[in-house]
Length: 122
Image (cartoon, rainbow, N blue to C red; front, side, top):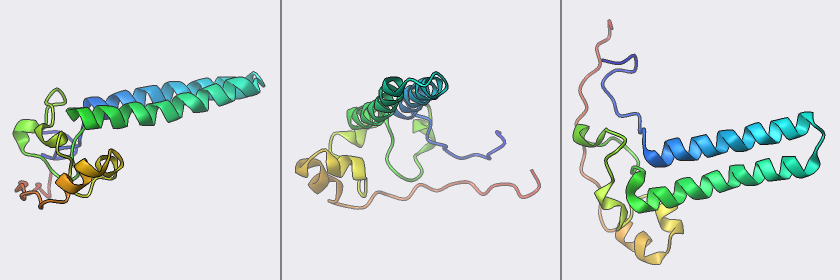
């Protein structure tokens, strides 16, 4: 068992890729600040914006996750989300993708996933 208990922390391809690209952008912008290079700061911040777009597109392609807990069989980061084509209920990214995803996402609530009770003494 991990230090966080037996829970899904949402590690996904979309999340890791977006975080990695954003880290590169912030690092580039920080180096540009130290070098007093204004164009480099803008380039670095542009890469940060690109990170958000890349993560959003990967989420729409099924490499992200819907809000809330997932069944344990889907916890592995290499598992694609089968419900991504129709959209996720309450997901801003899916609503931004267009009206067909927004309508499908709001069609019904997701089923509850039972979570095990965490040990208080662990």
